[in-house]
Each structure stands twice: as C-alpha cells, then as structure tokens.
Image (tube, rainbow, N blue to C red):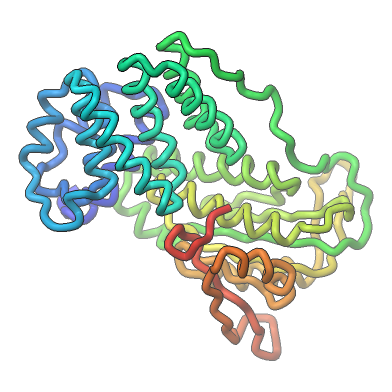
Length: 371
C-alpha cells in the first residue's frame, strides 16, 4: 500500500478483521508498522489502541507523534485511544473520564458498534476501580443490545470481558429468531419485498487487495447478509459473489415485510462499511410467484418486482438504498419518525418503458438512519 489514503481507509477495518479472526500477531504487526503521520483519522488510532494492550509504550509513542489540531483533537476515536492508553498504564480515573467522553460522542452520533467497543474498555476501567456493579450492568447491556442487532462478535467480546473480571452476564441465546422456513413454503402468488445489494467498485477494490483478503471480506459480507435477512424473517435467494438477493414474506403472513427489507439493507450497509466494503441497495415490493418449481430446487421468486429491485440497486451509490414508490409508501412513516431525508427521483430503467418514480435514502448516522 503506497497511497496514504489507502492506509487511512484500510488500516482500521484490517486490524478489526484480523482481531476477529484471532490473528493477533498479524494485527500487532500492522499496528506497529502504521505510519504515524497518517493518524489524523481518529479511527486508525482507535483500532491501533485495541491491539496494543501489551505494548503501551508503542501506543504512547504513536499518540505522542500525532499532530492533530482543532476539533479533531477531541474526536471520539482519538479519545478512545487516549483512554485505553491510560487504562493500560494504570491511570484508571483518567481512563474512565476519557473513555466516557468517547462513549458519549459515539452514542450521540448513533455509532452503536463503536460505542459497544469503547464501552467494553470503560467497563474494564470501572471494574478495576471497584465499580463492579457498574461494569457488570454496562457489559450486560452491550451483550444484550449487540446480540439483538446481530453484532455477535461485539456481544461475545463483552461476555469475555465480564468473565475476565468474574462478572455474571446472561449467556447468549441458543437461537436467534430467524427466517421463514423455506421448506414449508407452498408455491403461490404473494405480495413480497425484494432486496438487492451489491458492492460498489468491486473490480477496483479487488485490484487493491490480495485475493485472500478479498475472499475473507466477501465471506463476511455474505455471513452478515444471512444474519440480517434471517433476523427479519426473510430468505436469501442467492449470492452472486459481491451481490445479494433476498426476499421477505415468502409465507404471505408478514405485514411489515417492506420495513424488514429496508432494515436489513441498512444493517448490511452499516456492517459492510466496517470491512471497507461500500455497498448500495435497492428495495421493491410487488406480487410474485414464490415456491419450489421443481423437486429439490431452491425457492424461486418470479415477477417484475425482482427485476425492479435489481435495477434500483444499480442506481444506488455506496451507502444508499433506492426504493420503489410502493416500498417508500409502506415505510414513509418509519422514515419520517427518524427525520430521515428522502430524495424523490425519476429513473430510466432498463426493461421499463416509462420513467420509474423511486425514493432514495442514505444509511448513515448523520442521516438519522440506523436499523
């Protein structure tokens, strides 16, 4: 990686991915070899601080070398790194106050995953200063909320932190309420919502990554898609490398299937961004024939709605969800309740004779939109 911009964007998700895979030595090597003059992006300092627990001198040297000025100097990412350094060096009161500032900023920005990660460090500082009740309560809340959001690794790490300090936290549920059973779907016409999602700039990303690295990231994308779709009672129709198709309401018994499709799209975009994968999505609702059209075949979804969802997805930039007019009508109140900006567009789509009215939203904390 010779471009500073590449390092800034790639380092944090690469370290996080290596840690999630248990590749501590590789994560340490990456953290120690990151150029100090590229640390103005707070998320890099935050990621580096997560892996240098046993080498606080290296973390201190890294933070001392930064030339951050202005508002960025108080960014939650940098405060997370500073708070963790204080924690590693035994300055526990300072660690608590600094980590609390970072946590508050992440929560106010709607950055739940970041809040859960810094919350674990804050809970450790609380436990080490004798506030075991506060630490247990915090870790239990993180585990519960992360599990409900499908962030199972964050929940697992919270439970491991609790166990390290002898704190009792509820075990993970054995099963997460999931998808409709495709095996019992009777063939017939249903009103369904269809989600298409795809990685933007996949060819360029592949050119800047090793095949093994890209394969790991796409495998993570497919795993996350399966989790988010199942959690909202949908089924995965197919994976196409970097693309995903999912259908909601295959049983014909779900009323809020369009909202479920939108929430799955938002959650997938959110998680994919953590792995450096820019995803755009499309959601459409309409009638389709659903069922197994041949013995031992997968469930098929046949209808114009699938083509429309695919075309809308192709019109979405990274971080965007483009919805059909009917899909938007069904989720309009939910979006309005979050103060989300919605853009109305008319699109010329292949296979459609007249311009198609669609609505576009950005899946971001700044837009007030989180699943």
